[in-house]
Figure 1 (cartoon, rainbow, N blue to C red):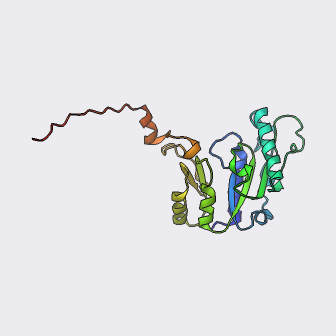
Figure 2: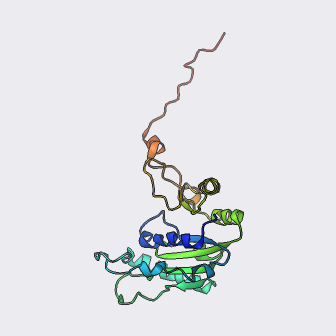
Length: 219
C-alpha cells in the first residue's frame, strides 16, 4: 500500500478494455488527496479513442446504445453527487459525433456512498477514492456488495500479500499481475458463487456419492 501515485497509472490501463471485461476495476484508491494525486499524471495522453480497426486506437466504442446511455447517466450522476471531474465527461470525444464513443473519464474526491463508487459501470470511467491508512483502505475496498476481483499495488510484496488476504474478493491481482487459468475464477457476495478454472472449476462436473453403512459397526 506504500505505492506512489505514479503507480496508479497502472490502474488507468483498465480504461483500455474495461468496457467489455467483468474483472476490470471501476474504482481505485490513492492515499490522501485523490485530486492532487493526478495533477502531474499524463497517462491519459496515451489513450486514443477511435476506430477499433485502427492500430493506433486504445479504446473503441462501447458495446451498445443501452450501455452507452447507462455510462453517460452514471457520469452525470457522479457530477451531481459532488465528485470532482478530473478529465473526460459526457461530451463525445473530438471527431466522434456518431457511434457509442465515451471519452475516458476520471473522477477524484469520490466517497463510498456515491453511486459511481457502488455501481458497476462497465465503461471507461475510473473513480478515485482517498484513504488515510492501510486499514482504512481495506475497509473502503470491502464496503461493497460486489467482490469478483481486487487489485493491490505495492513495492513490498509481503505487505501486498497480507492486504490481499484481507480483501473480500474472489481474486486479487498484485501489481497488475495477469489472470491465471490454473487458478480458480469466481467472486464473493453479489459477484456470484462457485468457481471456474483450475481444480476447483472441475468439481462442478463431478458427481459425488455418499454410501452409508459401508463400514460395519464394531461389536
